[in-house]
Image (cartoon, rainbow, N blue to C red):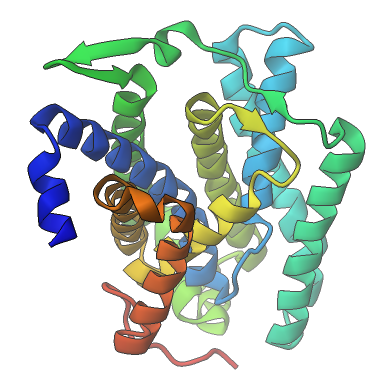
Length: 306
């Protein structure tokens, strides 16, 4: 009854506002979740440092604009490039030496890389919250049908869709993408066929980290507070989004991101008394999906590589 009353009391403009917010948040989750799902699709491991890569990208963009006074558009390009490089460095130092080690060792290394980035950021940048610089045309408010919408909320889904189609083109229509798909099926057969496994995995980390940087820039504009632990909760939620969609499936990660983003916003809209439990929605969704469909919405049953 409370749900129907909340819907009845909500105006069309109010519902439109919540839908726009949900779609923009879902787009951010989707963009970052792709990085999780790409690494898992090839290595069958979770890059738990991915959320902290998002945090580092926010700091790169922040200091590029405020400390070095580089124009924002050049800063954003540089941030994407540096973050992609950071992803490659993490892969080569934390994961590559453990390529043939037990999965538990790789998992511990991934968690260690996450803690290292958080504490490194805390030491270098301090724990004091910082405000992401305003980008006037993205931070401005736009009136659409009587609804006040921040421009970045309209920009985020467009960028996410462009990145998704660009990534799908790379994976499905290029030699690098063909090599990625071969490696995801069987390391040894791909190596015998002449695929450079190390290079392909590094490229995968670079692409995933670049997408994380794009997501971080838009996250910073939309939610401007930056701290060394900024990436913890978004990282967990994007991992959950990847699991919901079927981890290892790019389209599934996007669908999971939208489900999570829209669900969070609409629950707060219809049940404002539960706004303090907004983060719990993601974990409830994780439990339900693991209980009823462990492989995710678009996931396929796989056997563990040995």
